[in-house]
Image 1: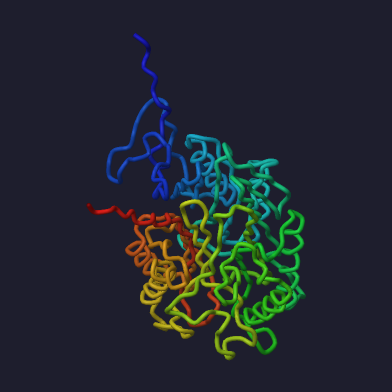
Image 2: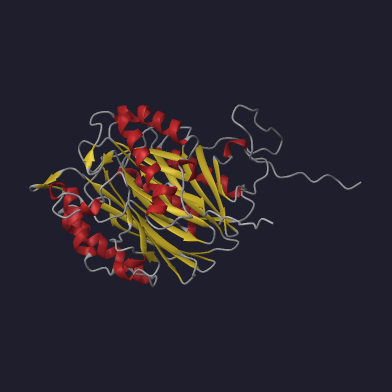
Length: 451
């Protein structure tokens, strides 16, 4: 009789929260339900690992992971950072195919700890260092740091690490460009000067990879002192003025993939506050000649487009779309911009974080639903809150964290999420939420003839 071959042990703490699109993560033993006993065995790895949540997304023969990791054990910042990185490595090792981290955003409680984290990550990743953003936004749970990371299967995808500000990923005729720019501290520079320089640096970095800003579908902007007054105006308003001036030179009308429908086309975006006085930015661009690839900028039926806000909000309005959707193959990816409790153009439920969180999630729900996609021209697309792979929740006041989290967990269920303390772009907004959804395209109805 042949000896029985056992499967490698799977740590029960590393089970995915969600499996999107193809519904099969390919892992053995990862289906343990909450409350059931942990798997035990002589070869089981010890669970000296950080608190983690991750989603497995499968499409076009590819696996992607969205990971949210925070340390459990406490200790020094270096100890917590090592624990978080070790958890990411353990999750990747338990996948059925080789994986590589492409990007990560590290939320830190103190910018002074960034050199320690950077040194540790460089030692860990070596010449495969993902594009890494260090954001001075303290995690709401009191930890020294939290990490959002994206990983991709290298069985069919090719990842090129081209320096600290540039990573490219190629798969099945799609070429993704991840670029970053800026610094946590930029003393002696106005908000307008900082913003103008960062956008120009992003353009130059994209050019290094053969890309251009009209290829960009998603932008993240982390601004120190976002609501602070500089001169006679808020710093965020000056960022918007610089963005508007920069975008005037970008031929967005020449976007090769985007459905225009007579509307302005701008990238999805998050503009959120951080500690410090600098500006950090990153963007995601796509190049492809696939005939089945198309992008659609989404606006919300409940909200005035940001670029059409009344003048009293800003001399030049925020130039971004509420979301950007990409259809390719048989699925849609929807990047949801930073979203808050705004209806039309006005803040709702001032002073009530629970109602603001509810309205924010309702705004996201309406933004990505099938009715909105159909309204904008895609009758076979649409998503629900269950299709979100991950979210970030930015909470202005630490005392509001638990109330906000309770609303999110009730509406979203088990989902990888990071809660970070951050100032939102209006003084009366208490919470902002962003995310990304993966949803299948509707199959056309099959008509049968009756005899």
